[in-house]
Length: 171
Image 1 (tube, rainbow, N blue to C red):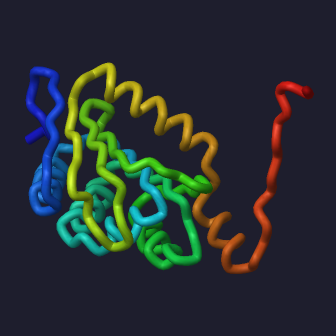
Image 2 (image 1 turned 135 degrees about the vertical axis):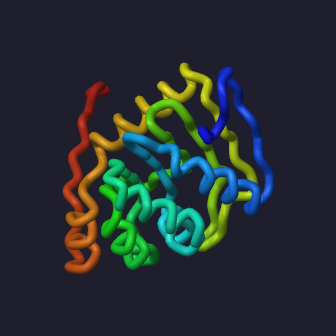
Image 3 (image 1 turned 90 degrees about the horizontal axis):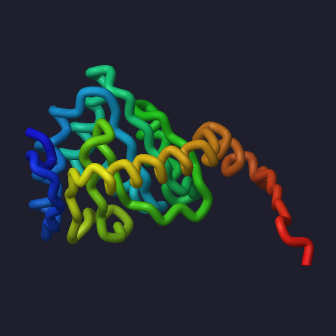
């Protein structure tokens, strides 16, 4: 079962239980890759929501490439370390995204997550142009994000991250 069957459409789903059920049912159909971008609260929500956490671990066991971007902080580092056992994980400072893309053909966008809470509404879509735009956004963020292990060292050793600013207009 895909997130949404053909033809292209978008659907808003309300309620944490409905969203979790819908997402967990779609995970077994992922064949190549799953990408996700989450704000700082995403790792705790992923790890503590048992059906989603089990489905994520199953993807990794099946050899599916799973990549997540999040804002790794002191508060969520333990959850991020658990995620890193099963997914490729990168840090992006101040990340505000809450979306996932399955195989480049399905996309889900969540309302803002709260610490250890599931979203209250989500948009599921298979509209090709929208999914492609979300995949492009994810790939761009992925290329700018730093490996989780580097961020773990920065936090644990109190290292200030490197900062480079490009000034495009000298005025």
